[in-house]
Length: 293
Ligand code: GUN
Figure 1 (cartoon, rainbow, N blue to C red):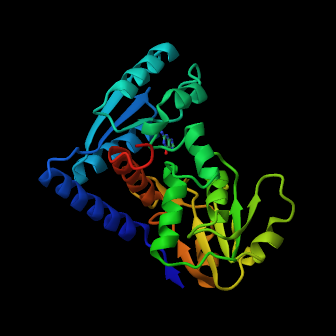
Figure 2 (figure 1 turned 30 degrees about the vertical axis):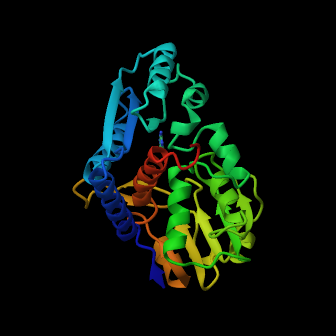
């Protein structure tokens, strides 16, 4: 059994990006610039956005965090987005989700210029991904694909079960795994809350991507010997023995599942660490205008 080390790969990619920034600086070329908007004071969102801005600083990207109060009107937010769409300095623009209830996330996402949508949430980018055209791919699916690639995991002709059909992870990763590409070319089964007898499906699967949002959902008896398991879940479980008062766990019962696997990505230390670097990679792509010119 080999552990898929998200921390190691994320560091590797950050180093690659830092080297690229150094080259851009030496050649007096444009430095990638990411703007992140956060509305309100959701503590998890604050942590995520701070992590994104810090990662930009670490590798030498420009970044700005725009903080708007919880009671910001939708109109004002949309106007701010339009203003940033028009700002030629800005390469990537993200609005952290979730938003306060009075703001429509769909409207916000569709207002972001798809050419700056480094989150890959805009319908133009999700549609182009489905058609196997160049597009920004959302951070978590991008991170999963990158891990499979960097560990040279064979996917062609393999059976892949994706557990969970969210817009952000399950649905896009199921499309990516079935695309005519590497990683891809797998025979994918997308399982969800209405799927009958998930165990029958997972037991036949060479690759299982667990993004169902239920702690410890995938148990040892659901996995065949030699499977590749990618755990996308992230849950805080109360643990008084920890200083923080909690520990992190995923959608996979790691102790039972890991001994059966050829490869497994753990929680923490797996996919989660890849998401920020995926966003940075998209920002670099945006800055170089590699997709939309
Ligand atoms: N909220 C949770 N994940 C994400 C993400 O990847 N991007 C944005 N904008 N908001 C999120």
